[in-house]
Length: 405
Image (tube, rainbow, N blue to C red; front, side, top):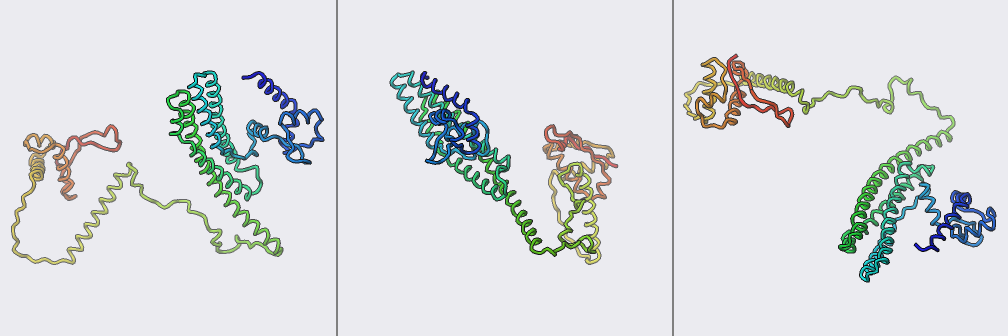
């Protein structure tokens, strides 16, 4: 850093500190008259490029750079401008990268370090500009555009903010990371500045802008709803002012309330079965079983009343049952003949049937479920197993034991 530049910077900061009252007055009012300043103050502030006169005869105003400094430091919501000029910043970054590579090629490492520092400053300035724009948008959203008084003005400010979000998103598309990777090449510092940190900032800003856009749409709907209500109220106020003899009717004295005032919802919601509730599963199965039984009884009684039959010579049809079904019938007959509880797997091993154990248990359970309710009443079935360790509510059957009641 050169010494003359250091001294000029210190002198500028001193001028800002010594004339803080004048600068803040110009910032809050937007302008300041030269009659409020002494000749020495006017000369110092004009020479330091802090105040300037736009046209002859106009009051003095703050330079845009000084105003932006105050807006950023004070987080002033009135500074509603969004900096979306990313293209020019990217052009500066490309130029500095070219200068940095050229200095390295000439082995001028001191000059290369200076260009790298300027590149880092430009890169961080780009990120800071994006973050400041997003922060300004969120400040306006959280305050619901409280710096304007009317709902119509809030709607216009909301639409302006949406256009600024769209512009920022369009500008973010100018950052092409394939181009940045080509610019950085194999240089470690360039890849850190142009790819790693820039990509992280790009993703964060894009996410914030998408969230802000969604919130702006919600606020716009609320503002329009408020505007409709306010217009309705203004219309009613205008009607009352034009008709001073108008009196609101006492609707509470009428025997039948008007439909407009009869909009109360019921306190008790209509009942509904929750089929996803596991605790109610057994009760639901019992209800369904009873409904099925009643339906079967009704159908059988109707058939008995409506149908006739004739005795004819019937042909004998021999249907050969499947081996596993025949084995299940033998198992049921064994339970009836022995009168003792018998394990299905033990019976399978005893008879040495060539069936899979799991298939055998499924067939035994299916055979029991295939019996009528009156036939099932003679048997007592017990399913041995354990609950599934991972999936609650699932019971894994290991064996079936059947006996007589």
